[in-house]
Image (cartoon, rainbow, N blue to C red):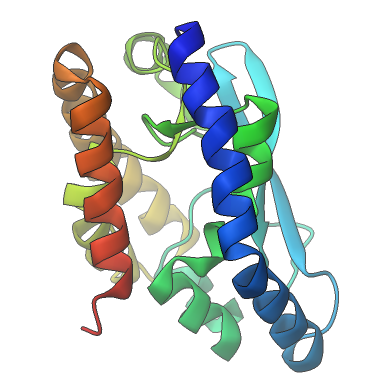
Amino acid sequence: MTPFRRLIDILSAFVLGAVLMPVIIWVSLLLLIKEGRPLLYKAERMKTPDQAFLLWKFRTMKPDAGDRGVSGGDKSSRITATGAMLRRKRLDELPQLWNLLRGDVSLVGPRPPLRRYVEMYPEIYREVLRSRPGITGLASVVFHKREEVLLEQCQTAEDTEAVYCRRCIPTKARIDKLYEPKRNICTDFRVMFATVFKSVDPH
């Protein structure tokens, strides 16, 4: 990551944090009243093939100490009513502004993967994680809904794992690798605009 991109990330974290603070406070109070503690969900993600960090999100599911892997239809019963709304509007990702400020993620880049998938597919993630992971990215914009549909149809953890590994990881990696050589500040802002537009889409 260049110093210029890092400067943009830091300034963006402060500006977005200030602008969105009322929303962050509202979501925090809503979760506290409706669902109780904990308000935040912190999970290990990979910044590089061998460097991990804790990704912060607002909690959208009932806690489960044995939770592992990505979320599919097998976990749908754990999603709270409030959590479903937050996911639909992507408000659950607001705490990642802290990760942005810390330098764990950039504004735009490949979504940070779980360690298990980096270890399962080292060749793929050696390429993908050459770029700093992002809060959003081209793969998130163009494949997010399709990924949701694919995983929602899975009724067991084994099905979810198989579909994610077979259908989702290769597709997202291909999109991320295609985007990287063409990225610049303008294309990054287009991705961010598309992310916001999709988040406020009433459908």
